[in-house]
Image 1: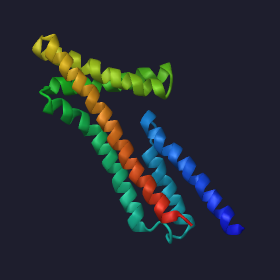
Image 2 (image 1 turned 60 degrees about the vertical axis):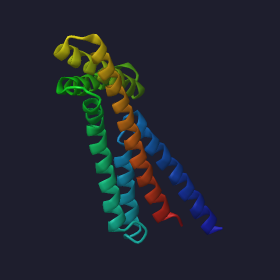
Image 3 (image 1 turned 135 degrees about the horizontal axis):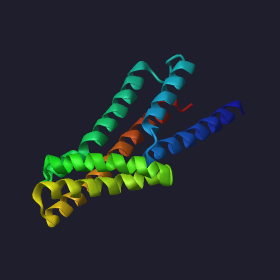
Length: 171
């Protein structure tokens, strides 16, 4: 009976961790919260379930997710013919959208306006450079796609962190 209760508690923990992981999609630091939970599990289990190696792997993956999120949008813009004006506009527009969205409907407003801001910023940046609307709109579209890919990549990395926690701690 005690083992069944123990497993039920772990299933509940994993459900909560899954919600935390999914919160990454709406702008919360879900991957880092997962890492924090992994540290707590390691401390409670005296590093028997979650070892230093797994902890370092989780930290490395969460860091990789941040690097991917920070760079993938710019890489997509540049690879699709955008200039650094478009990249700068995308970054600044995305940041402005996140800030403005926080006041609209947090956290969903931040995410939605972050995507819109990245698009508009890239369009404005490219238009300021080229003075042509069609290429500016194309780069704005790719900025939006890059931001979506970056969010998906970060969410995927978080899924791996979640999987590591579940596999290493299942009773």
